[in-house]
Length: 287
Image (cartoon, rainbow, N blue to C red):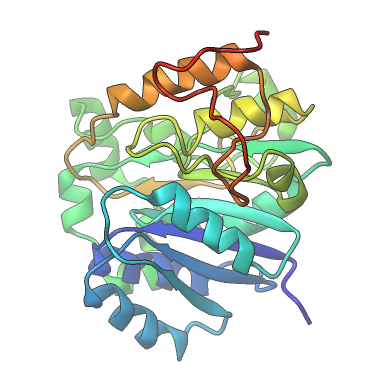
């Protein structure tokens, strides 16, 4: 049977963290999904981890790879979309560990012409350093124990409250647990909706907005609405130094918004014609 949904994991090196993510995938509460590791040119250690867990994960696991030529995350994500075998896609980053019901929550909450907007717990250095494969496999990493709470009170961890699972939509609504913006590390959408905007814009050459804000904006132009899944589809972001967004990418996003064009020119297909969102080009249309 083909998978009902595809989990696409964006990866660049950090094989030890990817091993935690793949163990978390193997313990998901549903099993009718495939995993595609979208690898933006990692060293061989990532391939070794994938080979190891392909034999034991119990779920289809595919490695999508291209050579390292700088930040080309959007390019490898498009390659993963093409290789996916289902009609519904879930996206995470390779340093974000999904909770047991992560895939189930994305599957149950999906709606037509809707992008699901999740969040993540920003863990502390202490918590991240204490991670083990055994803690992931047993589910102990999901427990918000006293140490985690103290990390939050000291400011060493952020958004601990997003690690509390609230399956009831009414409770989340009462507590105003909604979000509006997309995180590239936790969202899902129908493949057909991504195809309608030509996938991820490969003209972005750095982090910050091209893998999430740009996508959400283009989807909105085609009538796709955002739906918050805060406090479900929980994930834990492994602590590391903050990655600064690219100023050039934010400038490009501002130009994209002025054109009002839902389809990017360099995406799943590379379309003919001038790129009116290129720096210094004349904007031909407006919102």
